[in-house]
Image (cartoon, rainbow, N blue to C red; front, side, top):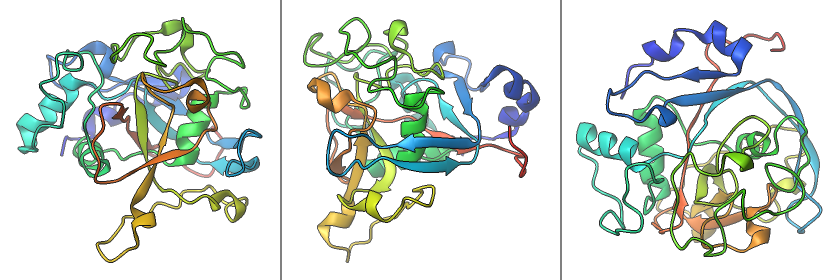
Length: 267
């Protein structure tokens, strides 16, 4: 696991700027070093689009989230340091450039990477709040209207694009590709009725599936839509899933971590 010491340096500045730079390997692109602080607060989770997305209020503590999707460069460093096997599609010429998001990773692979970096996968609530931004109720990270200049979706490009592509489409918190490019793993098991019994909590109902569990508990929520998906899958509130053992050419991830040194005060 990487040392978190460098991450702790400058947290005071992060409170002012809303982002920090994580000093890591010298050959890592600078675009992959950033994390953004999402302040403690309440937001409206869900939408009116589908029956499993009932709107409800959620309160989250402050946390840090990667500004960009995990790239092939970052994942290669992880493999080299840990001996973790290469993901599926690692030899696909459409998908293997250094600055493209890593794909072909299972939920377990993504979790292992985040743990190695001293982080974790985001919960559904953390992911959605980061996508919706301070305004809190946009259909897409940038607003209410889909725009092909702001996201990679629907086979318009035919492959993934760099993790820092589509700057016009960043969320209100400045996060890239929260819609399109790759769908992103979250930590949560998928349940169609989840919002019916989580209205008064933070929806951090993370569950690590066991071999004895029914298949439904091994379904993990993915968010954001991908380069292959149609428009409704890119919406901030849309919930879809993949089984945690699968590795798809359109699924990647980004990591989060709880805000270090936080207390009960509002940020």
